[in-house]
Image 1 (tube, rainbow, N blue to C red):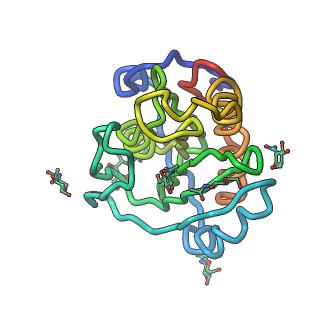
Image 2 (image 1 turned 30 degrees about the horizontal axis):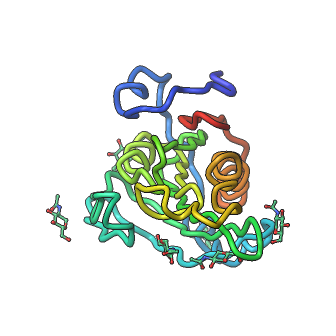
Length: 193
Ligand SMILES: *[C@@H]1O[C@H](CO)[C@@H](O)[C@H](O)[C@H]1NC(C)=O
Ligand SMILES: *[C@@H]1O[C@H](CO)[C@@H](O)[C@H](O)[C@H]1NC(C)=O
Ligand SMILES: *[C@@H]1O[C@H](CO)[C@@H](O)[C@H](O)[C@H]1NC(C)=O
Ligand SMILES: *[C@@H]1O[C@H](CO)[C@@H](O)[C@H](O)[C@H]1NC(C)=O
Ligand SMILES: *[C@@H]1O[C@H](CO)[C@@H](O)[C@H](O)[C@H]1NC(C)=O
Ligand SMILES: *[C@@H]1O[C@H](CO)[C@@H](O)[C@H](O)[C@H]1NC(C)=O
């Protein structure tokens, strides 16, 4: 098995080609979805904003910063999406999304972002979910492609420098465990995890 394989940040699609056979794991999706938002509250410092069933082919309108350049994203698999705030101090937090496909292959993928980006890479979430990964992405603790949010906010800078990638992995794995109630194999495109 490809345990603890770390992929370098970049576009996912070419990197993920040639992974071992994708045999979907049968899971009771109906029961997995039930109460997922409230069950995530068992994860420390975590509040769910929403959770939704999203069929393949949905053109999602995204609530992302205009500088991220991603007003919408088409989904490629039937899935459940969960959006969360993980607070890292009394005045800072990391926004995360988990895309949890129906035809899960038992794998978990934590996606990264480039540069100063406070932008969830929705295209990578869409690819990861299509390939059967429980896929998570985070905003690195601030929204948008500039570092303006760091000014006078050391806690926001700390989220960017070391909290976000780590939190994305820890919380993402917890959500995956809670959702599918089964162990999983881990992949990451984060560079600072
Ligand atoms: C899946 O879970 C739902 C809700 O818990 C239950 O009603 C249903 O019978 C389950 N289906 C299977 C095939 O186990
Ligand atoms: C998705 O919707 C947006 C408008 O919200 C539109 O600009 C975009 O072209 C749509 N994408 C597709 C693939 O239809
Ligand atoms: C950042 O974006 C999220 C939605 O993705 C929104 O809920 C939050 O309020 C935004 N934060 C700020 C400081 O604008
Ligand atoms: C999951 O289902 C989608 C369609 O809903 C399909 O495009 C995708 O290839 C499937 N992935 C796996 C790993 O079976
Ligand atoms: C949870 O929040 C508290 C207070 O906001 C903070 O001190 C602590 O570090 C946070 N825990 C994690 C795991 O982020
Ligand atoms: C996330 O949690 C932090 C800490 O509690 C809070 O300061 C921030 O406003 C929250 N973000 C959102 C979008 O609710």
